[in-house]
Length: 391
Ligand code: HEM
Image (tube, rainbow, N blue to C red; front, side, top):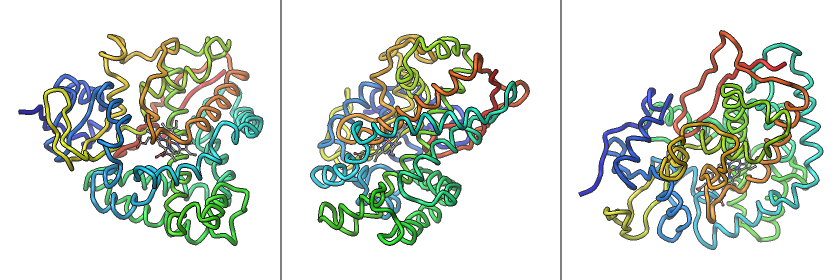
């Protein structure tokens, strides 16, 4: 016997507000069979953490997305979809660019970029935290670091968002995303060549790694997705979710007074609203989870978004955003060998934006009469528009 549920995690109502469904799954057990999708879900913090830290049992190969074509065509050979020594080889190439030491010289630049965008916001007026701030900030920085032309920013944002959508089941969003995900590969093969990309850029460093034999030539474009897909919407959604929560819970004063470190605010926002709601794994052996045996070869979804709301880990007020909470143990950036490689950059970006806003504005509030909107997405959670008023 095992716990099972008919919940469809990808219907419109559940995507709009997945938390009641997550609560039901957590009540059912540490592992629940999702009949609608033919996979298992891990909804609790403890079981997600255990799986993340045991990659020998929970493989990332042919496992991250819900359909075979995406796992086999789009994700094969990517850093996030590879195990063991092959993964370590790919990850080393990224670590050179994304390690705290490598990013140190960027800090000033990030703060200047954020300050310029915040200074350009209307005084005493409303602004859209997505279009006027988070998206131009993150995409502007990442395009430049990757070495890609800034005129392609909107295109890359669209392709990245659509690529993530293909991680879902065989539904309309996945199918609509597929041509765009294929185009991401086509774009990189055309535009990110040795001739066009600066050698000292992130994508240039991937060509250098191939030249040195650190990776195979065929791995270069899949490895580029580590930046073009993973480094955009994730951080935009993290920033805007935090701003939404801050504006709606009247917690701006401690931010303005620098009474709470920005990394603690980021951790709490990521706990509450994981920008990536889940990734899959595949069991390499029969595995006991609570009283259930999940057979070898089964797909298991790690529900990061649910783990962040687990009362067994976060207490009875798990659904409350509280910037004084110690949320460092959240799983929204993963954990273990696949833990987010862009974690340090995301933390620096968040600090730059929050510091610039705190310097300029004494208050941050929702824009009266203008509700924020979401775009339903198979795997990402964030705001499509977020009208705020700062003064
Ligand atoms: C707050 C923003 C971000 C969030 C919430 C986030 C989330 C995640 C998560 C959950 C994973 C774990 C994957 C797994 O366990 O299978 C991951 C991995 C990864 N992230 Fe991020 N990410 C963020 C920002 C970034 C940025 C800015 C970059 C790069 C510029 C990046 C690059 C990567 C890469 C390359 C991996 C794969 C690491 C590996 O497989 O070894 N991420 N991220």
